[in-house]
Amino acid sequence: MKNALHMLIERGVIEQISDAPALEKSLNTETVTLYAGFDPTADSLHLGHLFPVLCLARFQRLGHCPISLIGGATAMIGDPSGRIEERRLMGEDIIEANSASIKKQLERFLDFDGSNAAIMVNNADWTKDVSYLAWLRDIGKHFSVNYMLSKESVRRRIEDRNLGISYTEFSYMLIQANDFLELYDRHGCILQVGGNDQWGNITAGIDLIHKTRRIQTYGITFPLLAASSGEKFGKSAGNAVWLDPDKTSPYSLYQYWIRTADRDVIRCLKYFTFLDIATIQALEREVEEAPEKREAQRVLAEESTRMIHGDEGLRKAHRASEVLFGGEIQDFTDRELSDIFADVPSSTVTRGELVQGVGVFSLFTQSGVTKSNSQALQMLKQGGLYINNRRISNQQLIVTPEYLASDTMIVLRRGKKRYHLVKVTE
Image 1: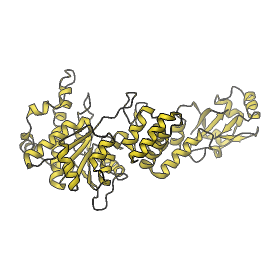
Image 2: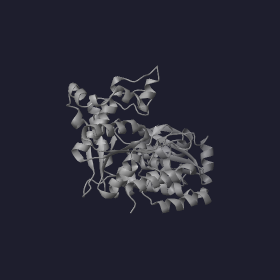
Image 3: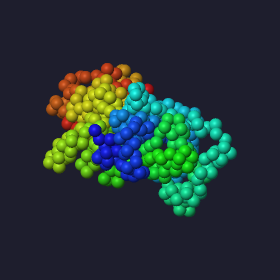
Image 4: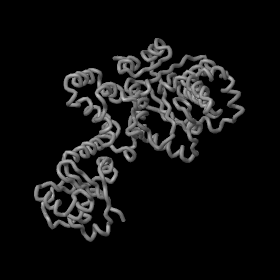
């Protein structure tokens, strides 16, 4: 069986690695404990976080022990890596709430039972009560300012005369280095994984452990994710694609992957699914020979949506997708309909008006879907008017709350593709 290192190399996941031969030997001869950190700067992980999460899961599937570290302490500081400006500092109550939400999400991907059960920790547990003097004495003395200035994430910020870097963010590297040391002492952790912008922080931890414990530890970084268009992976229209279904619905996630460019889809299959390489290579040939079928995109969308939201989430995504091909619209949530019809025009009607009943022609005309009642009548006779994708044939139809497709929305359609949302207000 291939070891974890070979598997990551085969999938193109590794950007940098420290002492690959020694790490490979450890992976071949023992159960290795590794960790990745997640700062709770929001109440949900997003698609960019899925890369390190799945890396931990891949190692666990090969028998190793993953640690997911919630950065309750580091979130109070803000990581300067990969940023051109300082992060907004958050209060402890927000950080605690975000941490609780992220813990629940991580449990979807990692197995916290069994012989190599995953471990979840929070660096606030060993950081919050340390005094400043003790910190300087026990940790700070091991790092020269010259060493810290040599790290790219720090150097880039210092070279920007207009911005610079605060002492707070300058200290972030030491806190993350200490996390690695603590996890080595507490759990025998010898490997840290993270994005390529974390290389300086990871190597700082490797150096700290070597100086204080005379032990060799390792680091792996992943390539920073960017689509061929130049946009960051995990961004849709400039907004993050979240793992929380209340922030990004299963349908929106599914559609995000369906829209993946041919140039990116095979790489995404390697990064964001557990499909074996032979299957991915077969899909690669499909992209080359019949790109119009978009089979690789469909497989990517289904595998990712099922992995993140389960079979029920995938069912919802399929059902929502069918709506745009004429599937009946009922029992949806407002959020789901808003996602499906994000780009269509909308109008409003009061709940009182709906309770009294609105004539079908009036509804279509007042909303602007038809120009007049006479045009609405003509379209109805031609079979071209729909409410919630159900064809309307009754000229005397009165639309009431029973026609709501969700709590507050009715979907009108004229012809094959001209949709309109009617939103009910109080």
